Image (tube, rainbow, N blue to C red; front, top):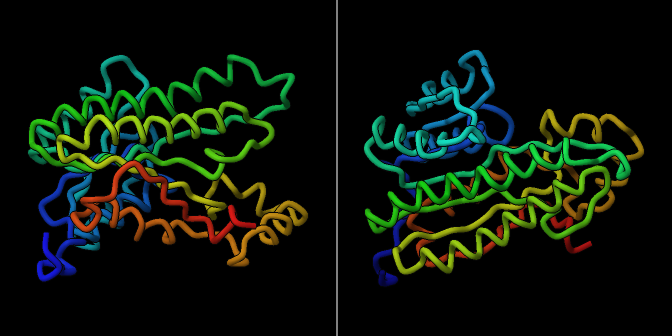
Length: 258
């Protein structure tokens, strides 16, 4: 592309088809809404029934979403999900690996009963979906894989060693797939959210001492909102990022610099 070819149309996702795991809840819902607002059709496998809320929000904005009941850790389910998106919309152009869990416990009690399901959802399922989506993307010579990392991809963190381990693993997976898939015109990146206002962070936000310590560590002086992640996602999903691959875009209000 030459500089004279640049246009804001490069940020449009019109005609693109996206899979967003867990796309009807939490940050996944924000990602689905962002992609739909930019013009993409969204295929959202989830184990959560939101009563049609996400579909209604997407439809109100003129977008299209297909929410399907699917356990991404079940054997063969990643292949079924990718095939379902292709059957429904015609292709898979974007994959957002956003589904994840964080089980917590004291270090002496945090055993395989908590470690194993977190590895299965946060890391193995992301790999399997990436692997299945890559087959389609390689054949069509285009695609975007966006993995959701975390500040704890870089930090330690207490009460959940599996969370830091899986999120560090997601960064390694992102870089490895960038190296593998670049020759096929497939870009692979990650987004690392900082402290974001979601249902999962209600406990920290409602504890005055914890909330104060977190905000004091953020140069922006506030918790992030799901909407703060939407622009980064659309950029990484669009043609505007065709020469951006293997990176972790940290959206944290400056937390990591303090």
